[in-house]
Each structure stands twice: as C-alpha cells, then as structure tokens.
Image 1 (cartoon, each protein chain N blue to C red):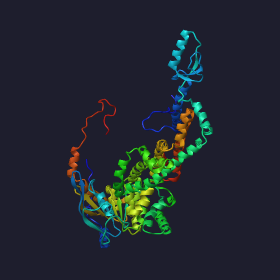
Image 2: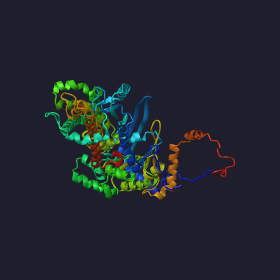
Image 3: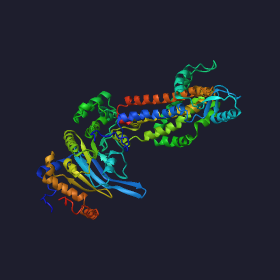
Image 4: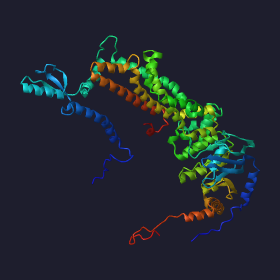
Amino acid sequence: MKHTLELPSYLEQDDAVRDRFNRLKQRPVTLEVQGLGKEFETAGGSVTALKDINFKTHKREFVCVIGPSGCGKSTLIRILAGLETPSSGKMLLDGKEVHGPGPDRGMVFQGYTLFPWLTVKKNVMFGLEQAGHSKQVAEEDARQWIDLVGLTSFVDSYPHQLSGGMKQRVAIARALANQPRILLMDEPFGALDAQTRAKMQSYLMDIWQNIDITVLFITHDLDEAIYLADRILVLKAHPGEVQEIIEVPVPQPRSPDQLLSPEFLATKKRLEELIHPPEEGDEMNSDHLNMVRMVPINDDVQSVF
Amino acid sequence: MSTKPKMQWFSVRKELKPKQRLFLSVMSFMLPLLLWCLVSYIPWLWHPKVEINDPGAVSYFKQGMLVDRELFIKELDKLEQAGEALPQGTLANPIYLPAPHEVAVAFYTAFTTEPKRRSEKWLHESLWDSIQVIFWGFFLSSLFGVPIGILAGTYDFFSRLSEPFIEFFRYLPAPAFGALAVAILGIHHAPKIAIIFIGTFFQQVLIVSNTARKLDPSLLEAAQTLGAKNKALLFKVVIPGILPDLYRDMRILLGWAWTYLIVAELIGTSSGITWFITQQARYKNFDNVFAAIMIIGIIGISTDLFLAWLGRRIFPWQRQTASA
C-alpha cells in the first residue's frame, strides 16, 4: 500500500520565487568554475573523481552541493578552498583566477579543526592576525564575531570545553572574521545530533541573511540542502559530474514549517530520483537478507504486526 | 544478596576504582619488597652461606667469615667423626644481598660515610656530578635534536636530508664511541656528556619528527584557509600544536638519558654515582651500593612525576585524562 501525494513539479515557481531568482541572476558572479576536473593516480590506474564541472555562484547566494557517496563533492570543495590542485579547468573569484588556499575563501570543516591550544577568542583572532591586523583590532573584531554567533560568555574557553555545536559556531565565526568572498562548508553539521543540527541550520540562515557572504555548502542530507539552498548543485558519481542545478522553489526566508510544503516535497522527490535512481533500487531489492523464521511455533508473540 | 555491586578486579579494558588503583600501585612496590624481605629474613629460604660464629677446630675458619653451606656441613661431619670441637654458625645470605633494613640504614649512612681518601668525593658530590652530566648531555642533545626533529617532521626536505643518516647512526651503540670521545675530549666531564648526547640525540630527532608528523593535518589546512603561509604554519600551528606531545617525548627521552649515565661515567676517569657504586662495591659495602642504585631510581621517578605535574599546569587545553 502506497500513499501517493499529488505534488506539483519542482520546476513550478510562484511569482515571488521566480522574481527573486531573476534578480539573483542579475547579481555579480562571486565564484565561477570552468571545466574543472580531477584525476587521482591509484594503484589500479587513474580514477576520474571530477569531470568538467561548470557553475557560477552569485553574490550572497546560498548554494548546496549534494550527491551520492563517491561523487567527489568533498574533492570539489577542497579544490575550491585550494587544498587540492585540479587536474584541469580553473576557478575565478570575482573574475580573477585563484590558485592555492587563501583567506578570500573561508572554510568550515566537518571535523571542527579549532586550534585546541587557543581560546575561542584567539581562534577567531588567528586569521585576523595573519592578515596583519594589530592585536587590539583583531581582538575587537574577534569579539564582535563571537558575539554574532552568541558565544560571548565563552571567549576565554578552550575548544575542548565546548559542545560540538558550539565548536562549529566558533569555526564559522573564525572563517567569517576574515571577511572571505565565499564561505565553503564541507558537511559542517554532519557530526551533530538532529536537534543541534536544526538549530545550527537556523543560526546559519540568520548569519547569511545579515552579512555579505556567499555560501557553498556540501551535504548529503536532502532536507538540509532544500531547507538552506537557493540553488542545489546535484552531482552524480563515477565520474563526478554536474547532473542538474535545481532552483529551490521554496520561498525565502525559510522556516521549519516549510519542511512539509508541496514545493519542498516536490524538490525532495526530484532529488531522490536523481540521487537514488530506480535501476539502483532494483539492485538494492536483490540485495536482501537470507531470512528464515526463527521464532518458536508456539511463542506467545507470534508476529510483530 | 546485597544491593551494593561487588568490587570488580578483572574486567577487560575497564578502569578500576581510584581506591583499587591506589592499592595496586602500592602493591606494585610492596610485592618486590616483600619478596626481598622473605629471602632476607626467613632462614630456610635460600641462605646458601653460613656465617661463622665460632671456628671450632677448623683451621681456616675465622669468626665472621662467610662460607658455603656445603663446605660447612662437610667440615662439621669431618670434625664430628674425629670428635673435635665443632664450628658454630648461622645461616646467611651472600654479602651482595643485604637485607632491606641494612639498605634502609645505608640511605642515611651512605651520605655520612667519609670517603676513604681525601681526594675522593662524598655521595652528594658524586650525585651532583651525575646530575650535571645528565643535564648537559640532555640539554645539548635537545638544543639540536628538537629543532631538527620539528623541521624534519614538517618539511620533507629536512626529513630526506637528515633521517636516512640518523636511522643508520642510531644503530651505533653510544658506548662504542667511548674511546674516541676520550681521545678527542679528554678524561673529565666532556666525553661523558658526549656519550649521553650520542645516546639521546639520534633517537630524539626521530621521535620528535614523528610527533611533528602526527599533528592533525586538518589543522594545517584550516590555518591555510585562514591565510597562514609557510612560516606562520610552522610557528603558529605546528609548534604550538605538538607542544604537549613534545613535552611527553622529552620526559621519555630524559629517562633514556639516565640509562646511558652509568656507561658514560665509566668512560675516562670514573666519576659521579657510578664511581661511588664501584668504589663501595670494592669495599664490599653492598648496602651502600643498593642505596645508591635506588637513589638513581628515586631521582628518576620524582623528576618524571614533577614534570608530569608541571605539564598539566602549562598545557591547560589538554584534557586531564590525556596527560597521564
């Protein structure tokens, strides 16, 4: 028995949403990726992790990248951050080609990567001091950013004294303090429990709405991608290629009660189709347990139903 | 049945209660001591010698002499058959195994025993010599070993340039350089310091470089995305990041340096605690020998406990559990 729900097409946008996307596309391009590819040399020959990736992000846009495991989404963001070199193609930030890591592209990692020997304040000051700001200026700035993520009472705490969610808020503050052009986030909430994750998502929306930042956010959680993104870049695996760029038809600003709206569900259905295509489903059907009934014939609980 | 859970002593990979752990720590010292006491104080346990109280008619026995038990019994039998005066004796351990209370007393008397000759040193002077040799050997080794280790662990350039040779050199036993060190550096402290240096330095470079290599690479990546370049990565990330581990390495290496001390002090003119030990052994003051050996252990473990305590103070970001 299947519940079927009449859903609109994910391509259908109401006027406000369509209008917003039109305006969004008029904005200047922050990041442009052209023909990006990455091949790894392994013992079994060369493996193509990414192939001919092309996309643009506009100023203050929120883009999520989603795809099945092995689609190279982490490789993509590491290349964008400059932590790995692409085998082909190039990336332009504000129209200028960039190579290697730099403070113009902030990064938030899944593992918290806070410096354990520095207090919260000193962690946030790190990039500012690297940029050549004086200690006083860096400290003042850092306090503002810490205030923004609501951790004022923890400025002198060490990372190990914070919860996972708090650590990730410090990591966001630390990345934003450098005032990067784009914030790259590699499954930043993947290690958090569901409740904390929901809270972090709304913090992130708040921050994004109020400061000049473009966000590229990697996730494997469909709901998270739809809830956060203006557009979703869907990758497919082997080789990692752009499958579709979806304009999320859910109106902005977002709130948790949109999670069951028709547009939301329609988008989710489309993502499910792209990420778990039917032929893969067949494979999964044949991959079932070899089960025999192992309950005594006269057991008092005969069936779990 | 009581509601209180029973004390568990054996559960796989589970920490015991603090009380149990303290008890076992005390026992780890008490058991060897107990064994020593048993062997020393229970006459029928071991005691292969007989101390002569009265030589009787045996011409070569003297009062206070230690003879083998078999020999004593043989002589006893002989005299019994001949009907002459029997020797008297008590069972004793060899002179090289003094009883615990004798060593305990020696902890005091070793310090108050006047040197046999005027040119010789008191125990505290010998100990001070040893501590100086250890300090300089370890200090000089660390002065070069730590920076080279950090560089080798951070830059492949320095790793390739230094480590193959060091890997080779660390197999050369430090004492083998004794004669050479004396020829080059004379007979006093310098060659001894050199032996401790050789014994420590090469291991130190490898251990430190390994520690530097173990730093979480994502911290370096994070620092790079925050704009840190080569020099800042080394001084602001690698070095502060490995400090607690480096500190722990140094504690272990200092222990190694102590193990080279005895060999080092035999080189050239024997000196320090080693000289004291060999000298006292020559005079058959084995209680003093035991006391001196134990003093080395006590200095070693108290330095280590002090450094562990200090480490917890100077690295406040280390979790308490990780600092053991």
